Length: 107
Image 1 (cartoon, rainbow, N blue to C red):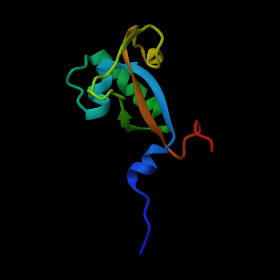
Image 2 (spheres, one colour):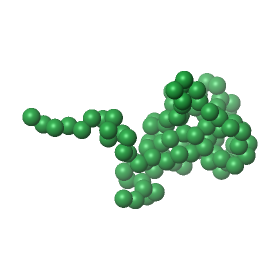
Image 3 (cartoon, rainbow, N blue to C red):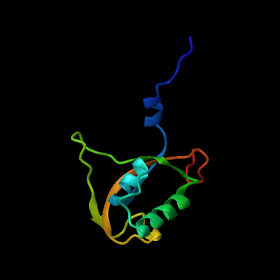
Image 4 (cartoon, rainbow, N blue to C red):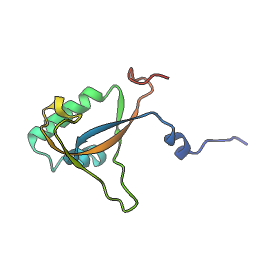
């Protein structure tokens, strides 16, 4: 009989990073639905993905919520999407899983 570790246990201990990003990116990052974005917002998101693609799993994006599934966002001037042309806006805390090959993750 082979012992296996439950996937939920492994996921709990995977290295993650938290980024404060625009709340209007949520649908595109989590569901792949870009329909609600303007052309400029989509361009900025694609630059974000290109910048981070070597270090984090973009498809692992998660937004923490409370027991009522409410997601908290805050208006932020300084956030992690500034360098991609996004000005002050409502932001959520997104959690991404690091890739094992990331230069940002060290054991």
